[in-house]
Image (cartoon, rainbow, N blue to C red):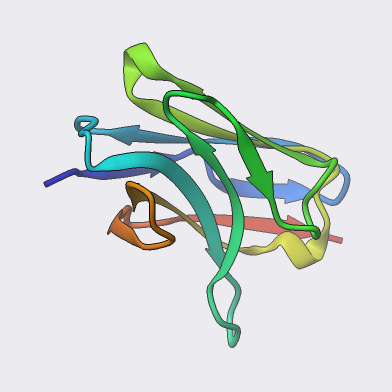
Length: 119
C-alpha cells in the first residue's frame, strides 16, 4: 500500500505560479512512475504529466507543455508540479497517483488539492 499526500494548492491570479507537492509514504518496485492528473467541475479527469522515479523522463499533456514542470526528489519520495503562467482553465482539483510498473494504470491516488486561477 502506498499513501500519497498532495499539498500546495490555492488561489492565484492568471499569469501566476504555484508548486504542488506529492509525498509518497514509500516507493515500491511495483510503482515505477508518478503522475499528476486534474479534474475540473463538470469535466472528466485528465492527465497532466508523469515522471519515472529512476530515469526521470517526463511526459506532458499538450495543454500544459512549456508551462508546467514535473520533477522528483527520490530521497524524499516526493514529486512536484511547478505550474507557471497559470490560466483560468487550469482551475481544477489536482491529484497525484502512482503508476503500476510497465502499464498505464495508476493504482494509488492522493486526496487531491484545489487549484483556482482567477482572471
